[in-house]
Every structure is written in C-alpha cells, then in structure tokens.
Image (cartoon, rainbow over all chains, first blue to last red; front, side, top):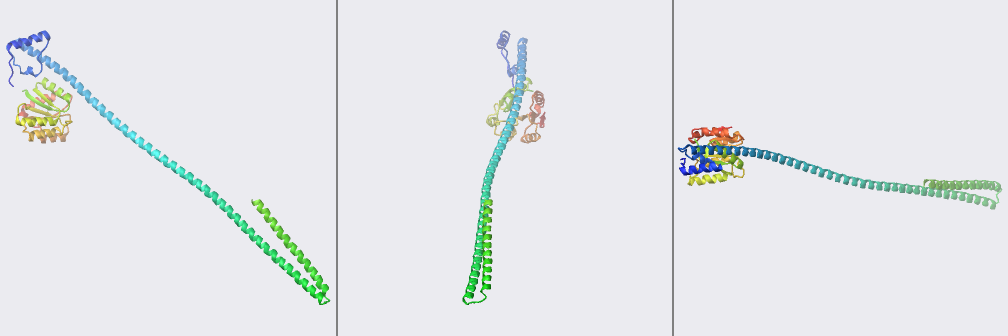
Length: 225
Length: 144
C-alpha cells in the first residue's frame, strides 16, 4: 500500500491539537503516514504511535481478562448446569422410589385387607363348621336316642308279649285242668302260681331297667347341654 | 512485511478485539475485518468471485463457529474449491485435535494456530512465515 503524505498545514494543525488538547491520531492510519522532513511532526507521529500502542496494550489486557472471566463463568455455568442436571436426576430417582414405595404400600395394604377378609371368612367358616359339627353331633345323639328308644320299646313290647302270652297259656292250661276235673290241679296251680310270680317279677324287673335307662339318658343329656 | 487485510471468522466477539489489538501491536496487518458466522464469510467470498475489491490477503477461520450451518474446515474447503481460493487461509482454534488438523490439511488449510491467552508469540511466528504461505512454498504448520 502506498503511504500518504500530509500537507504541512495539516501536520501543523495536528501538532497544535496534540499540544493544546493532547488529542492524537490513532489506529492503523498512523502506519500509512509517510515521514516528513521536519522533526516535530515525526515526533508527533512517534508519540501518537506510542499512545496508540499503550492504549491497545491496555485494551488487550482488559479484553483478555474479560475473556478469561467469561471462560471461567462459562465453566462455572457448565458445572452448575451439570449439578442441576444431577440434582434433577437424583430428584427424579427419589420421586420414582417414593412412587414405588407408595405403590408397594398400597399393595401391602390391599394384601392386608385381603388377608383380613380371608381371616374373617375363615372365622365365619370355622364357626359354621363348628355349628355344623354341633348340629351333626346333636343329630347323631338324637338318632342314637331315637334308636335306643325304639330298641327299648321293642324289647318292652316283646317282653310284655312273652309275659302276657305265657300268663295266658298257663292260665288256659290251669282252667282246662279244672274243667276236665284233673286230679293234678294242685301241681298245675302251684306251677301257674310260681310261673306267674316269676313272670311278674321279671316283667317288673324289665320295666325297672327300662325306667333306669331312660332316667340315665335324661341326666346325660342335661349334663351335655 | 505487513499484511494489508485480514478476515477473521470467529463466533466469539471478544476474540475479535483481542485479535485486532494483537495484530495492530505486532504490526501484522493494516486492516482487519471480523465476522461471526461461516455463512456470512461464505457469502463474502462468493461476492468476491465477481468483484475481488476488498478481498482479504489472509483468512483466519475458527474451527467450531456457533450459529453457523457448517464448521470452519468446511468453509476453508468451500473457499478453496468453490470460490477460487486466492487467499492465505488457515484455522485458529483452541482445539489441537489431530483428526481435525488432518481434516483441515485435506481441505486446503495452510496453517493451524492454537488459540490461547498468549496468542501474540504465535501470531509473530506466523508473520515470519507469511511470505512462504503467500508464495505457496511453506508447508502446513501447526502453531502451538
């Protein structure tokens, strides 16, 4: 690039502004101004370049510091974001765990409720079974008693038939002996008398036994209830 | 030797200031234009195909340019193979990934400058090598 040559009056004006107000040209324009024959403007250019260089150095340092701080901030921000992400993840995991525990609790509660229901059903079933058992025992007892009574009734009936039959036959024989005038009526009479006595004794003995059994059965039923 | 014009393509605006001041202090360039996206830079190079007025001598391109449709290496490839090249071009990035460096070399990048707080020594070194890049005699170099 061709350098520029400034006219003398502009050089003087620039020197004046610099002297009065300390205002200098700056930037890359200084690199393209051609040196002149008089020293004062060359010194002006040299001072301007020095000022510009100092300003740029200061700005460069500050910019680098800001750049460094920005990098550190970015790094901190990244770390914070990572921490936040980790925290969020941990929170989500905790929430999931809570949900899982709550779900398990619900299941446990449900199972407990089912167990209680089952226990209640079992209790009812047990009571029903016990009642059925008692009812069955009662029925069995009743059946046994009924059969006992039937058996006793039969025994009594047959015993009475035998006793009455024997009495009738003996009596008939005795009457026939008397009617036909048999001489042996005394023997028959004694025999009839003895036989009748024995039969009566036995019949009362049977009746007594039956009454005793009945009484004993009643007592047993009372003590069971 | 001073470079007349430089184009910086970087999404970090603060680095624009750092780069401009560093280039000025080191007397590397007279003018510097900075853009923040690869798309914008691509459009500029497209326009310079018709009218090369204002076309820079050197382009420094960031590797990952946030908010762009493609990365810096793709931009270099397009500039070299679609928009007629004609500039010294390379990557300036905080990364020194060997795979990416290899990609950049294949896309036609001439250099790779690793960005850091202390960028000036690397730019000074680049300034010394610049003539070789301009003449296409210097080989690909990584400034670490």
